Length: 365
Image 1 (cartoon, rainbow, N blue to C red):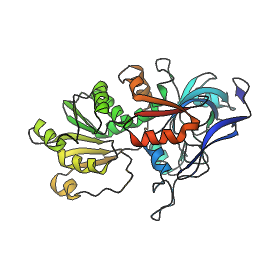
Image 2 (image 1 turned 180 degrees about the horizontal axis):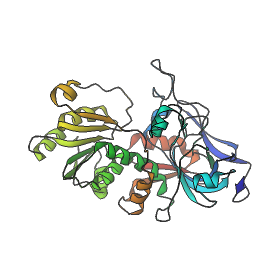
Image 3 (image 1 turned 90 degrees about the vertical axis):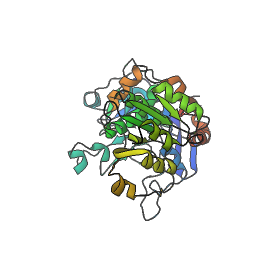
Image 4 (image 1 turned 180 degrees about the vertical axis):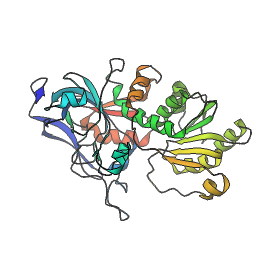
């Protein structure tokens, strides 16, 4: 392995042992094998899926007949940025990286052999490994991490601050969701939820030249951030009837595209009611509970296109370009930078949302 400097024998990290059992520990520094990259982590972000996993949500852990996705013990963290300090045999040529580069890796490590990978839909890989959840793709809440040989890696350009590059992953996800919405010039677009994904959706949707871009959230400070990201109008569902407001703005028709980024069940019902006939509803939010709504709205009453959005396939270059352009107020979006030892505080801040937007952890603090 080609490496930048002498590496320590052990490192601090966070290890997930089970629901409500995340521990600040030490473990051996990994090494990069053939085709692999060793990264010295600069920072790792937390998102709603980390909170859901911590709380034992079904889909991550066994429940309702589902086998569960997490393979503990595992180092969490799928949003991250760092410096390349080691390259296994053939890795430099394979990934286009050199020692000292600032780099990120897409959150999924595809198998490249299943039906979905063979058809270009690698983000839906049948045999996937995702950083921070699976044994073969240990995550970024550690001083060092390895990019597996099948990983999709990107060199971060100098136009993007390393402190801001931790936001590349959530922004890539937001751009993919906006792409799924197929926004047309002049459309009325509503983004529900102004957390990190929602703010990214607003910036990405703004680039599509909508006629009116509306953001909804229960927190006024996040609505202020939404305006800074490009929202034309912000609405607080706790203060106004957002369905009536959107209908009034569209001559009674409703919005053309609704992007769900809140993960709140009420937003689903609001979206179905405020969207016009033949409109497009895109779901990205991570829901911590089951959602019940009037399903007949989708078919019998409106003939809607209801689409899911998963991860950020093919969107990382655009995410880096968008951050580098200054389109997002990154110093306001990244609200916290905490040491690994404060993982419980970081999870609480991310779950609460009232005092934070993007919470990050970093080694050595």
